[in-house]
Image 1 (cartoon, one colour):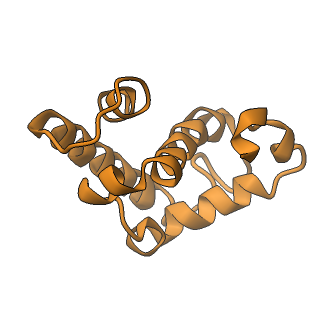
Image 2 (tube, rainbow, N blue to C red):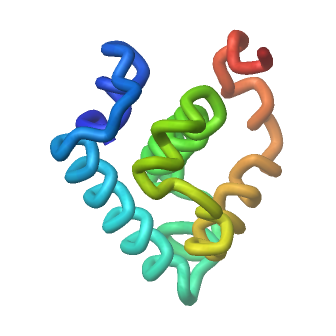
Length: 112
């Protein structure tokens, strides 16, 4: 995730480079791993939230933030319709976002 998002968020990357595409491909591979992990369970380690979800969700949310704020380059890198490509991951994220107190966990400047 760092190889993808650090250049976009902090270095102003706005063109697809081979390095960015490789990083994007790795992230897609990881999203597929998550999708496969969620075949039988609602959360990463069963049917209740755990530390695995607490560690993984922020990474997924950072990806969503990049798509929100840097739409053009993220689309160029293939991050389009992720909710369709990874429906179980999308549902997992929605379950986490529905947890009590979730709204207090986002950075305040993300409300813009």
